[in-house]
Length: 317
Image (cartoon, rainbow, N blue to C red; front, side, top):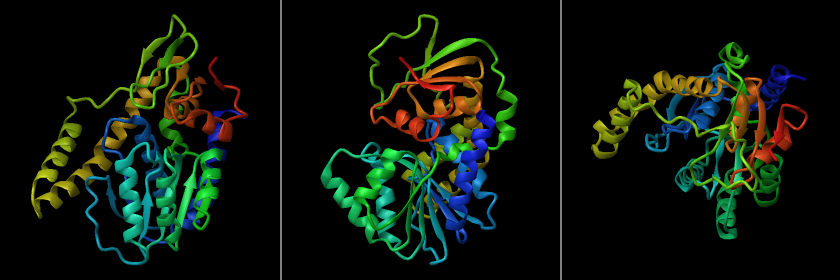
């Protein structure tokens, strides 16, 4: 099985499980308006999947632009997937828990997440909120996270599913599957999930992290400006700024970030990575992938769950 066949297999698992869960028009919450390309790859896969359904997106928001709308009971609340479930990124997770608490009559679908907690007290607190919701569907993207949810959130419905980036359109990926060079990349993440490897880095490897937002890009500058103004303005100006930011992020910024990630990896034939979505995107682009775990162990957990049969995806030693 090659990367194209594997993508079709994992995309099929996602569509088969998720399609029956989205039962009406929906709001899409927690989308990334920040510099992490990996989260934009997840978002792009989610938008592609949701576009195949016969329902309308009533609103697409990040944690800043969410303004507690009144929703009909038929509206489904869909949360962005990723790696922010638990205590690693509390701002995103706290909003998710509060939405679960405040919207008990709406179906809630949390797209595939990795779980990371530090304290038993927070696990118990979140478990009480999650298991008290009568129609919550929690998707986990690796075996360890799924087992954690089974043990600690026994009442909600749980699903083990691949990362949503596997739903990115193949028409976007196909032109880049032949590498633009024979170089080696060592993707060294520069955030709090970095763990110093206990082995040497190849001398010929280029050491980089994901490229961040291009400060000269007009759409991205406008998005940042709208968020800045919205946080400081009273209603109704606040609401107008946030609505404009939401539309701009979907229509202009999302595609820019996806192609920024593809262009970044294109020159490399061999990729050694400490970021999960460099692993995933590199695999989708048919590169040789060697991974090193981050602080929460999510790279090995994901690779062991979904890509263990792929000879081009191995642990780095």
